[in-house]
Length: 82
Image (cartoon, rainbow, N blue to C red; front, side, top):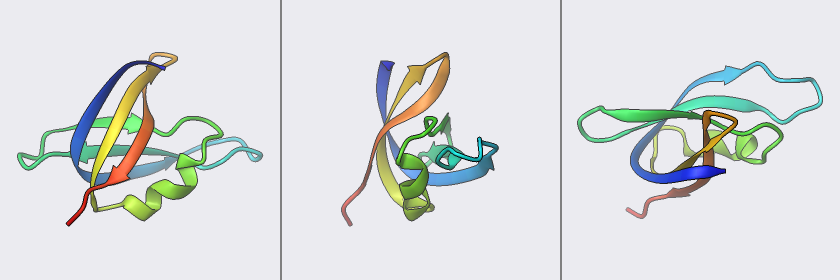
């Protein structure tokens, strides 16, 4: 993974992506700041983030997003305190 950037805001799951029958779930999501500007990203293929991401939906988070095969891909996610 390359070009990792950190973003803070409210996580919104946009949709569940089609995936193989043997793989983990994949999501298209966005992190929106207070001005409703944001960045979109996907969870990587066969990553455990696909299972944990719905737990963070509509919560304030800090995410690190990198480029993987020319797609913005989730690297880490952490819920913000408070």
